[in-house]
Length: 345
Ligand code: PLP
Ligand code: COI
Image (tube, rainbow, N blue to C red; front, side):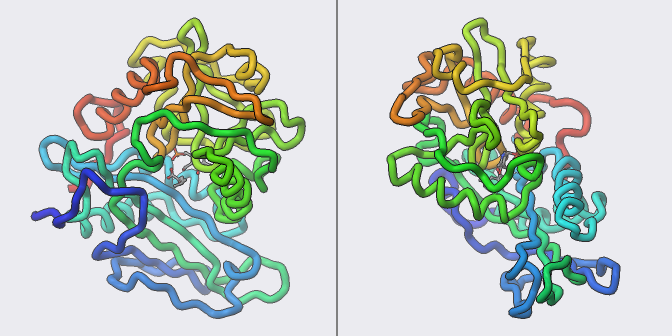
């Protein structure tokens, strides 16, 4: 199969249409069979639930070309599970987890020519989403939904690739206190756009949220979890006592890799922002499907800038090792734990 003629090494994180999407509708209490479509548009009623009460959730994963030319994706079963918990919280019908993985396989296989070649640094981003199509005017869950998957080839999420970025603490809370941040719902992201724009306006690449109740503990950024490395080399992973950090699949995988493959000490615990300002950490990184691991050079809070000495000008040694091991597993260069790699074709 011949790949599309794209400048794979210079892709940015932008949408471009590919050949196929996947679509499946829910009505009268059941999901249809579902299948591939070449129609990349959606026509819905002006009274559809998504347009009024924002019943929508989504997922994000990637497909990779391995050295031998196969196409694989990374732990799609965990995306299926997390999507199911988002659906449950939003009173949407559950899209069966095995049907989810099968749909990912179908749509990636059909778009094989769009999966960036091995070694190009680019990947195929896979975006499953579900939204209420049924009409509602009073506040209540709709009775019809659409599940779709679109795919699009992407480069690095942050411009500059692996160059450390500067971020700031957000003055605003996310719309995701007390457990609602652990679902991937569009409404959480809509409410994060204002603080995101404020951060960008002030020259930062991203904004970091503190816990909304006490504004004391580190939570996560708009699109990624946060990791720190302390002076003893321990990987310190912020844990939310209000359960409002999205359970990142990348972060959970990195914790396993650090402990079991790299022999590192990992400490998952609530992290006070004062520890950052005290200079307790030598490296910081943002992790997620889109972010992979993006190193952080500095965090600014109310005009006070804290830098991470071991990862300021270029990615620090621990983040480099973690990123290298993770991407080697994802691209099939290094064997990961059983079940992490899902072969598509
Ligand atoms: N946190 C937020 C708010 C996100 O949007 C994402 C992206 O999915 C992540 C964290 C990282 O999660 P994952 O590693 O599963 O992509
Ligand atoms: C992902 O990493 O898949 C996300 O959904 C985050 C978003 C910022 C692109």
